[in-house]
Image (cartoon, rainbow, N blue to C red):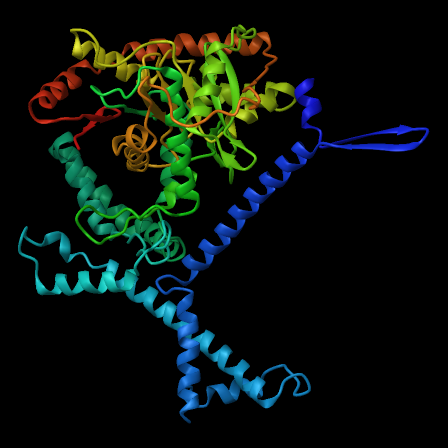
Length: 577
């Protein structure tokens, strides 16, 4: 109740002498600073929209065009070839309000703006044509043709000096629709080893019949969609490959990312969690302000689509009867934290500022020191996201659509990301590197099947000995998007070098002791939900027992010892930096 009273900005009581008004200047200050931060973000988004809208030109180029037109007219020349006079005749402005010079100036501004917009569209069209050039892929190493050199120079000239993260989105060429004949030829080539002679002949006849009848009609629909959509396949791929899957996503869809195997900057769990959360939120700030440099095809000037970055944070996958839905919120000022069967909401901003790494560590330590036990059924609640999607959808609608359960579930789903403070130790410890790596990988991939929230865009796992990792849901983005996040925050040393640790392993910075403690989420879990959690847990454990990563990882470790300093793993695929 004390916290609730402190949160009230003003109170008043009616007395015989009148109304006694009491203002809480601290609460009003918090409201003001929080609103100021929100407006700064809105202004930043508007500014970025303007910059992206005129790319590959810049907003300042409009002024250059206006000055150039005025200078030309001052020299008694009409660069518009009579268009400025035509605009002046049709201006809906009476001569009573503007002089002749004012009308002329307004006409020049209108003509300059139209000319400027035309130049932008022309530059954007030229850049799109240049990015459609593919011969660079077939150049021999060290022998680049003159055509490709000219192409590289033109792309760099039209790309501008400092493009924002999403600046190239409107200039990227659309994904072309392959001819149906080529598609069927590749299909027949793929099934050739699987069919006998008569079977392959029958399949060839069926392919020809499909091409001459239904196939051509579907191809026309596909081309029509390609003219309208930037990518004719991405929305279908997202829905039918991922979101319509009714089985568990825990192992079948989600994947994991590892920390450095042989380097741990600190063994203090709260400190590692503090820097980890701070590094991820700093990355989110760069994504929101579009300060990240657009990714390119390695070694080239070809930009890659950055659309998947938009749903990296504040995103969750909600279950449905026939198909799941990806929900994304514009912003979130907290993260959801799981520790020993309990869920917490950790606010990461105070008075409009991001908490320092030391304050993050202080708040995490509060969670670790909290002795309260989990509520009935709370500790296994995460198993709902590990099981089949239809039962989870049914239970969610029936028991999590109102009341305390909805409020707590909203905190998890609207959080920037999910954090698990694991009570185990993982990493390359002892004399069994293969077994350790296998246990580490399996822990990140599925954990105990209930201590990860598999629906979140990604969940960060921080172990008792300071190792960390992540588990990512797959439908919202491909693995390279998450790989870039993990690289910038950890592989490129944001954690250890940019943020850093003190000599005794704690985070740097000062702590404001008046920080409110993390909020414990409460639940009212009926027996039916607990039964489903137990069933999901038993089925999930059966699935995870069939996964053996040791064979692949032993080969990786052998290669790592011979040739590599660091090893970076994503899912069951190895990537060697």
